[in-house]
Length: 387
Image (cartoon, rainbow, N blue to C red; front, side):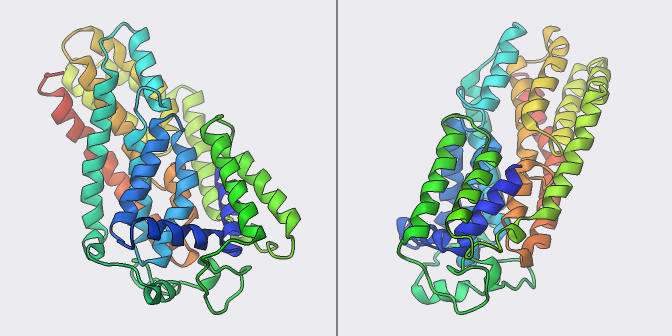
């Protein structure tokens, strides 16, 4: 529902030029310094989740704008998408956030020593460093020193953003016109439809972030209302919804939910907890959280796996703060997988010409995180025993 609603709403926003206007204002805010744009998206998404937004809602609101900036200014869409996802995860474990509240609540109920501040700072530092590595891996070095001018803005409407061999059609970019090919004109002003669309976007953001309302249903409602106001202008918007991505994610989530419902994940976790060597058991639990979270809700995984680690931690052989922090980071940074909601939103909001490229790169990156993050966090936070 989130994928359908958000891609539907932002298809309308692209068609009437609202996204164009937001892109223009965003670049003005950083005085045209292209390399700062992904970091601004990182910071904004991190602030949203740190102050209580659920991660998918924050990504759903920021990703369409960030990826439109990538389209217009020849930024690799993978770089932009991962900056947004990493930012959401960086703020996700603040003491007042959803992830942080769940994790700290489970630790407190189990009577284990906890450190909400260390959990938040540990996740923040890890994701900042991870984003620095990713920035240079996906073309960030080429962005340093580039400054936007109007000629570049017009050329960027049809130039590849970073995917090898990618070509961009004006129909999938921010055209300022209803889903038709034609000459691109940069939108720098607001008219009635753009103003109403901004009100709708603001309403969805406030409803989702401040009142924790369902972002998918809000976005669909806003889209329908805008379509009623200008039906002829937005008749092609439904076709712009990323239906293949929606079906893919629904299938994966249903399968993982089935395994959770029939106790498969609980059984695997219990078997790991019974391993005789506590250090190895801690590493295996981090891997379970990482693998399952790449396909399912991180919120659900945290609530399920931390209790499974409690018997292991009550033995006193391992530092509870270190194990919980390692498990939390391992289960959250894999949200970049295209099978998670955040990764799927990135794929869905990428122009169709580059969607396959972004899907492949997110799959490679996401599953490299599945393999690498548990052992890195285990070595730093668990093995030394300093926490």
